[in-house]
Length: 308
Figure 1: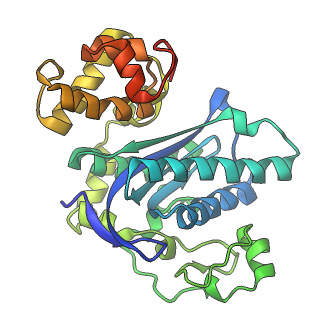
Figure 2: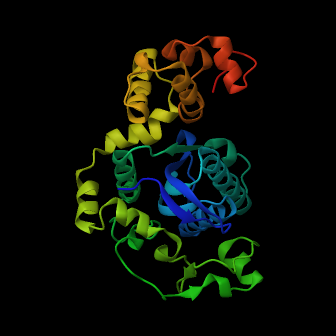
């Protein structure tokens, strides 16, 4: 498969983009979606934020205390910005609707680059499986992009571009102009998944074979994916375990063990590891064999012992 592809982005530019897994987690089991209105709002935030932050939504799944999405972005920076916008906008919605003030502090967002074919396929399969967390059938779950895959629904529903500003605010919770989008809504005012997802990317990742897609979903090691995509990046690991994590990334990126990496390659890894895993400058220095002060300077940290 071609992991990196050329796409026209929402701003009209044509760039090479790569896949990222975005996870939004309610810390301490905070409930993010209390009812269908919240679920619908989260899906719409995923779409509006993608347009604002110039990324392309591939597939998503929203459940009660977390959501997952795969997007195509030109860089880690843009994927991070998308995740933060989703967190900010949805938190504003939730607090306004439910009268709360603290949901922003109870939500964590991570954007992880899917840097191998294995990661791409397993992440794209793992996302719709999250419907099972709500005790629902994957095929019928309303708050997932699964129904967009291998299913042509062109021309169904009403064009979002035809909505008035008042209708956009009422149905999509945004005053953004959307006269250039291909999105469509159904009779209940919900976005139609096939109109908002780049299903072509997912289908090509599975060789345009739906049976292959379903096989990966059915045979997936869910605990492994939960650790790699959700829990691992959020949990501080002891050095022995963290070394294995870094070793795995080093082998994916450079086909080289950490111990044999050049200084240049170690420096390339540092910002990625610091953004996408829970670690410290001292731990990174130990694992990579780098001077703490130099590593801190690379990251723009005044204190070599600062936490991520």
